[in-house]
Length: 402
Image 1 (tube, rainbow, N blue to C red):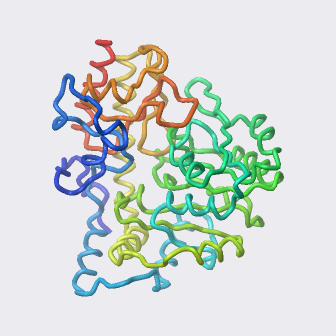
Image 2 (image 1 turned 90 degrees about the horizontal axis):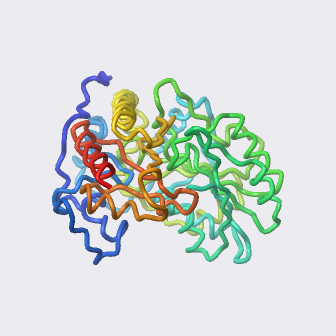
């Protein structure tokens, strides 16, 4: 096994010409395509700290597995047929989370979000409701919009930089018989909260006692600060078949473009419905990449999390020094920083647009996270330190010149 010190997280890679969403897709996602972004920096010089993938080269073990697969010159219709893939993922869950799931409950998806869109449609009738906590990853809302079902939001409570679930509000909203599904993020995006077992039990108990199904998006589960431990929600309710677990190698190993996710659906009726409507063809390179990640990716992930820890420490020190009124706590999980800069800005200002024009930095302002997020920005810290340093220098300067 390669030492984690041998991986090159400081390497700056040029993504131009690779059809990268980070480079090519920001106008359609962050702004109106015709938005005037002219300002202090040319668009060609923008620093991208928005979309949640990484600027790091993926593990060479994964690259080698994909190269080896290409030694076979056929790339026809493929599916996850080799049981060794499921076994490698199951072993990953045992070693990292002390959690065993039934392999017969495992299905696949082109990503957690495509699975979410399908599952909401399978679970909810048109007059029923979906509960989320806010701020929220926007695609949770988009999934309800796509399926024409109502969205119910419960605001997280912020206390000295730490976000907590408002259980009194959750109890009230899950008591509505029309509220049949909760879409939950564990760890939470964008705040980075790693929910404790006590919090997970409280949330799960209330939802299940009121008859809700829970989709637990656990895609950030491996991206933890040092010495933190992740608990799958379903592991705390082994006798329930109403918790769907969504995991993927995409965030952990920077494989988002490979479009392969693991969805664990214990309820047989729902699983049959899902499989009936899912075309089981997968990209052959995605299969071997994910298998290699779970089988050989431990050392690379250790190196990654060490590097991310240092990037978060750097961000915290810079904010404390130059923007003392910014509120930021190093998150327990994810590679995303959730920073409250409301002291420096007027209410409802479009911070995404402000920093594009004035700092040449693409980031996501709070208006992109459904609700309960005014005055916040989300910064992606999964980048070489030199990129973080320049991006943060620009952000700080733009705030001070406000």
